[in-house]
Image (tube, rainbow, N blue to C red):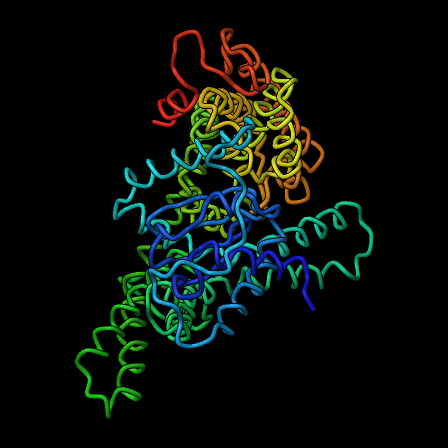
Length: 508
């Protein structure tokens, strides 16, 4: 029986070049991430015409189809099932899909929304050519290690917040120990999951990655002394687990090259766990522990000493990171802070970028009241934006227009400065998990002044971001000379520059 999600998966597959063109499949909170053999086979106009597709992001690491939270988790298994059932032999990579559905007339789009979508595609293609650096590709692989952990982090974070509320209210005291165990269990063993995913992403055996990472959290390490210092279970945290599993992957690959096939099944796993385990105990745990402590100290100092300025800079820069797909490289830092302090103080500040984006989109909606196509796009993307999913608004509205993307960053800077200012006063606002932002972050909020004060400061930051993003876009983001064309869509400014050119300049 066909479901809406299986129908969406079946529609996407031929538009990305068919089964023969798909090398890998994964997903994060909002995006279906595909590794493709030939990106030129993708029919972007056809993908954009699908109702479930909110946006597209192309880079050298993967081709990402934005479907939104929840939807992507249901479409991905259906997509994988289609690949698994593909007949053999598969079609040659260069074969054009015969069953590709008819695409919308995007090449000659008559509406502003269609034209903005095409401009967004042009900008992303140009950006891909500029940003295919080894460092950025490596950071994306690091993000791929942590992205699958986000659902568990969210679930445990919400439970931890609920447990804290029950403890503060003094009710259901018999239940709170059980909730504590449920919320804390995953975090106590997160190093094992990080090690498993690291080996999987970097080409090793996942269970061996989990085995070497488990050394970090094993209670028996308290009997090990390094340079006169006794190790503590969990020392180094996720960073220690990440580096241990990464080292284990390289040791395993070395063994596969040199160990005779007849001995491989015994020698390779043994050497991988033994050599990597010794290096982890006598070097990596101590080094990663020092680095983790430095991250916590730096984050606390940054917001308590230069809070307003730091919040302004972080809030302004986060949208460009999202645009480049690099924002998930911050996940290890967030996870380290959650391990150390119980919450990450950086996420609420960075979430203000989404507030600026929402304010900017609302200003475009108000200013261009006669542009029904663009207003329809904004109405469909705005609920996701309020929940912290910014890609639909970025790639469908602000980035193709150019100036609204910059003014959205201004809104994020203002909201970040607001929260940073209160951090300077000693009022910390943090999140017990990563993933959600916007109004969806409220159930995960935590801090040092109580839930009411923490929620009030965060709400103030959101309202500031909304207001500044709206005002900056309303008065400066569209330009006084911007006018409607004869077809109801956007026309050129009086300086003669086309919106596509302006948006490319803004993105650069």
